[in-house]
Amino acid sequence: MRPIVIDGKKIAAEIINVLKNTPKPRGFVGVFLNTHDSASESFVKQKEHVARELGIELRQYGVSETDSNDSLRKRVRRISQSKKCIGVILQLPLPRACNISYIANTIPPHKDIDCLSARNVGSLLQSGGNILPPAVRALRHILKSQNKTVQDFNSIAIVGQGTLVGKPIAVWLLGNHPNIHIFDKGFSKDDLKKSDLIILGAGSAGIINGGDVSADAWVIDFGYSRQDEKLMGDFDSICESVDHVGLYTPTPGGTGPILVASLFENLFSTTCE
Picture 1 (tube, one colour):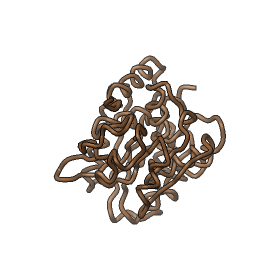
Picture 2 (cartoon, rainbow, N blue to C red):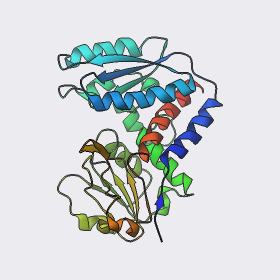
Picture 3 (tube, one colour):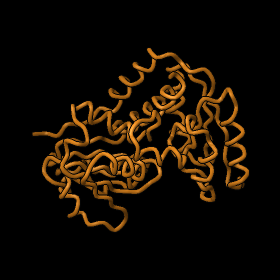
């Protein structure tokens, strides 16, 4: 039996249609991005597209290698505290010298729609709250599309501990599932076969294929990187062993569109209460 292939664009369209029928928040979303990173500009364009669909204004603020932590923090604070600002996006990666937590912690929690501040990350261990990391929302949407929840899996493996995917999903799952395995660099692929849900966020093209996981395991791939000018995920969906898995998300067209839609879910959930 061939695996289920998740159509991320379809799921994202369903989320956006719900938001279109929700009262629109008034104000603008500030986006801080590294102006010398082409990938960041590409991702912001995706967010701009959804913002236009929803009638939301996005304002871009460039960040350069010459910006210090303190100067950027002051800029983010000034913009985020504006009454007209309804949300702030720190488009990662920012320049290497930037301390993401230090900068994100200056954003009011209800405007931190990427869920990067310490207060919002800490609240993941508690029930309730409207702000969830977009990766967590995306994971839940994918499982819901198949009438599943994380509790339907015996064991969950997370590969990669990045700020936007691995870490927030791990923190959230610690409060929602008893059997979590967290891996970073240097892990043994044999360990993945102990889990029936694999969440990838390492950002290393094709490091996992169907033969590396247990039969019929589900693979949710948030990882992305460019190889020969092509966008690739952590999961090798071209390998013949792809039929070994029960479900996977392709790259592109899998988790990416859902992540963007989930970001705007956070925006609407905090401004339209």
